[in-house]
Length: 579
Image (cartoon, rainbow, N blue to C red; front, side, top):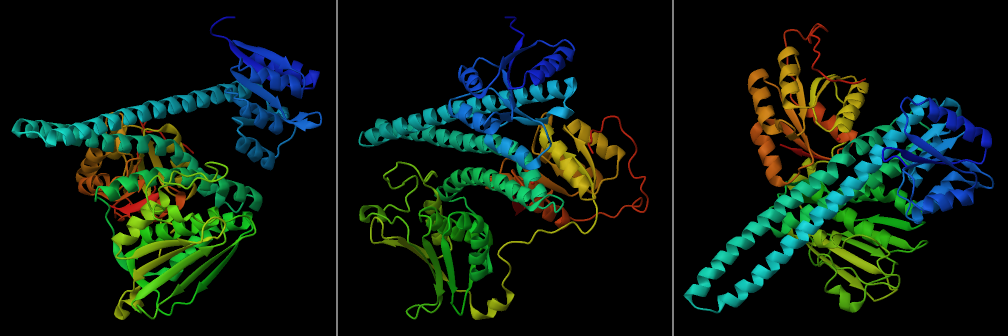
C-alpha cells in the first residue's frame, strides 16, 4: 500500500450507506483514503482490535447493538484510531453521549458531503496526533524528573558520607550541596513547565464548558452533561495545583491573605460544590452549623480548599446509602475557637494508619487496591494549610468499617471584626460595560474560543497570535484592555505588557499556564492588574474584566475607533489572583 494512503474503516450494516460513503470519499480531490468495510458489529470489533486503520467511521445503528457500545468495547481492547460516529438524525443528547464515550466527532448522514467528511476525518487524525504527542511529552518529562530526583538522592548520600571526613571532605560536601540546589531549581523549573503544558490544552475546553453550562438556551440535561465535563477538567487542574501547592508549602513559598471569613458560608459552599456527587452516591449529608460565633480570620481560597478536601474525602470513602454529618461549635474548653467536625459512616481508618493519614503521597491499602483514586496529597495539603492559619486538625476512627471523624479547630476573629466579614468567594460578575480588548494568545484554539465567547458577551475583540501583531494592532486601534498570554512565539507577555502600558496606557490581564508565586509577582511588576492561571472558567474571566481599570478616550463616543488592518486576526478562563 502507498505510504501516503490513509486506511479508513467503515463499520456499517447498510450496503447502500457503504456505497454512498465510497462515492463521497471518491469525490474528495486528490484523496488517498482507502475505505475498508465491516458489515456488522462483530466484524467491526475484530477489525478495530487489529489496530490496522488510521481512522474509523462508525454507524450508530448496528442491529440489536449500537455504535456507542462498540466504541467503548473497542477502546477497552486498546483501539488507538480516532472514531467518528454516524447517525441518521440530529440528536444533541446522542452527540454528547458519543463524545463522552470517546468519539472524535459526530456526523449526521443526511448532512454529510465530501468536504465535511474529509474535514472531520483529518481533524480527528490531527487531534489524535496531538494527544499522542502530549502523552509522549509528559512521559519524557516525567522520566527527566525521575532522573533528576535519582541524581539528587545520590548527591545527598554522598554528602552524608563526606560530612564525617576531614576538611577536604567538607569542601567536597559543599560542592555536592551546590549541585543538589541546582537540581532542586531544575525540578522547580520542570514542575512549572509541566503545569503549563498540562493547563494550556485544558483552557479552551473549560472556557467552552462553563459558558455552555450557563446557556439557558440549552436543555437542562445537556447543561448537566456539560457541567460534568467542566468538573472533570477542573479536577485535572486541581491535581496540577495540588502538586504545585505541596512544593510551595514545603519550600515556605505559599502566601496567604488573611481576612474575616464566615466559616458557615464556606462550609455551605463546599457542600454545594459536592452536591452532585452526594446525590449520585445517595449519601445523606447533614449540616449542623450551630456555632454562635463562626467568623474566623483566614485566607478565603485556602479555607474553601480545606473544607472541600475534608468533605470530599468523607463522601469519597462513604459507600452508597451512608451518611456524613458536619457540625460546628464553640467548645466550652476553648470558647475563642471554632470547631468543625466532619464525621462519616465510611470505610474507616486502621489504627496504624492514623498517625500517617496527613503524610504526603500516603494512602491506605484496601481490598480492591487503588480503587478510590487520587495521589495522596489532599489531606497533606489540608494539614499544612490549617497549621499556616494558626489552627489544628486531627483524625479519629475506630478502625476498618467504623467510619472516620476529622476535627478542625481555627481561632475566631475578634468580635469587632465580625460585622465586616467578607464573602468566601467572589460571585461571578458580568461586565457592566463592553470593552475594547486586544487578546494576545498564540494557542490558536484558545484564542478563537476566547474571541468568540467575549464577542458574545458584548465586547469588541481583536486577536493577535504574536507580539509583532499585537504591537501593530495597538498602534492602529484604540483599545482599553489587554488580555495576554506570557509565553509568545516572538517574545514575552511581560515585556509586551510593559510596552503597551507605557505607549498606550493600557491595563492588562495575564492569562497563562504558569501560576507559581514568582510568576504572579513578575506579572504585577510588568503592569498586569490581574493574573489568571489556565485553565480559566468564563466567570473568573468576566470578573477580572469587570474589575480592570476603565480608560476614557476622546473617540469613545464613536464606533470608528479602529481602522481596518490586514494583520489583525479575529473571529466571529481558573484561579484569579490579583497581580
